[in-house]
Image (cartoon, rainbow, N blue to C red; front, side, top):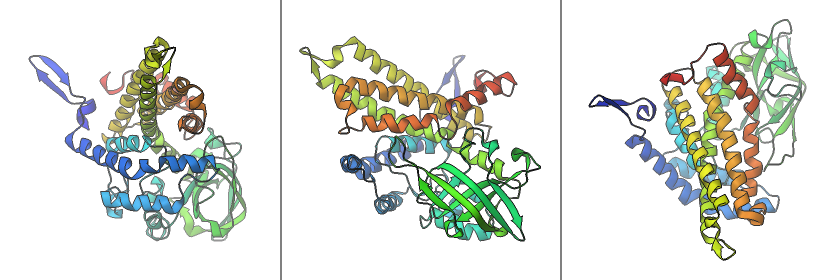
Length: 406
């Protein structure tokens, strides 16, 4: 999508910047939008009903069925290399598709994906873990966060000690997404106490649930919930080391960094759908004999929401474009996640306010978004960590104010 951020065409001594999407990008986005509208959105009211009854909004078999239908549409493995049967889409296209997914509150995602660091696996590990995960036959989870090591991932304490050709893992991981359903975990543990975790002191392991770890459900303010994973002298064969011994922290940071433009891309879709609901409600709801939309306070909330939404959209697309250029996207991705996560929280808050008491009920998805979107400011890098990265890059001269247009 070079035209969005870097296509310049001189006309009579002037430079025109073209912010349009390419025909291919438009076609992919429209196909994804059609699938979400026809196959996913019809399930929305049933998802709300189930969640009101404290049931899973979408059962695993239903998710698999939807993913199979999506495969027939051509959507399978958005980021997965073609050699593994995936689409290997550019980051910008992935961003556009995740925005379409965000338009519906059904907890859906396209299939054919695997944790990005699983591609560091050797051939034997790929056959046992990577390929079955891509095909949906196995479920993975990534485990680095601990009770005393959240944003400060270098403070992990779980130990991995050698015992012959094996490793013995002891400790606890917490707030692990998919931890309750996973068949295996990608676990980062301290493997050399004499070295810094960030510089060779940690290693990543592929650990089957059958090896002895257990998961404990964590109830949160959102739907579903993560898990604590407990490792009590869990024996892991040496062949299950992912990558190289001492590479654990580096792999962990690569896993975390990937989501920093995908997460806010999804948030843009949520904000778009929520704002549309607010506009429709304001135009039809009457108070004091007039449509709610004639109230200046409502108009300003809608105007602020649209402005912030568009600002987030372009920050996110710029981050994705930077990835596609093969450049270091950490600074741009941190800005997109920081702003995108705050934007969707502010928009949903205004939308709830516009709907009044009805917005606070579980008859509508607004209160669900209100709880769900709050997580975006915490996981895979808190707001504070994004600010630290952004400011550090500038203060140390790693990047210029204004980025590639500076």
